[in-house]
Image (cartoon, rainbow, N blue to C red):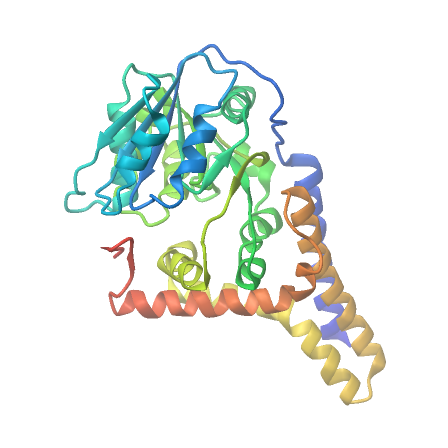
Length: 375
């Protein structure tokens, strides 16, 4: 009974923290009519994105409230006709510049190198850089709202996290964990105020940065060899004296990250090892997650079989507290709450398996992405 009570108290406390983050500290750009007068460059790195870039680029061309908007696109060695699609969609729009990327030199990974080329070749020089991935579709005032949010937060980097579009069972099990993890375990207000680089988070799907602060931090050159270049860039900004902020960007953007299970599996596998760091630390974190969120329903069954209904009731309370945390996270970030949250213990198990797979393939130097080695 004591162990069950400890579980319910711990999970309820974490869910309470999720609620405080969601209600009190999470920034929420509205996405309504806004206007910024400073020059802004939206930077779009592309590698074999012919099948998905059209909605993204059309949404960029439809941006309002940014008279000085430039859209700079980099074709990063695509072999599927991505550049042709960009030309067809952009037409003769003078706001769009299409660049041809060069292969990353030794010591660079593909994504940071593509972003660095975009940032250093944007002309004329903007005061704000907005990095957008090809799977992101912005609402009409998204860029204006994000820039306004950046300035209101007095930040160097603002990460407005898009609403993640889920369609398959795998999506629904894994994708909501992204927002749930940082809402549950990251103290948002402390993250914004603290100068500690270790206390940082960001999502690379949509990042908005003050250009001067970005260059002062070293830009993507400072994170050239990092798999999680978005989080490492946020840390670099902090190390240079800048501030970072997270925001709920569900009113500004949607993102369909992966089309199927193999893409999702491989996408998480390439980077989870970098999220957790040393394998021993990863083992501790995963053990705690499994104990807190997967053990309670198993304990319910075991207690009922053993004829201990009181223990089963307490363990069921711990399970419900975990489900409540997922519901709070989903409601706060435009996600789907029901019935997906009920499968939260299974989600944690899948996360654990993906993490083990990530370390396993990294040890064997078999991690790749978009045809390039990751490590």
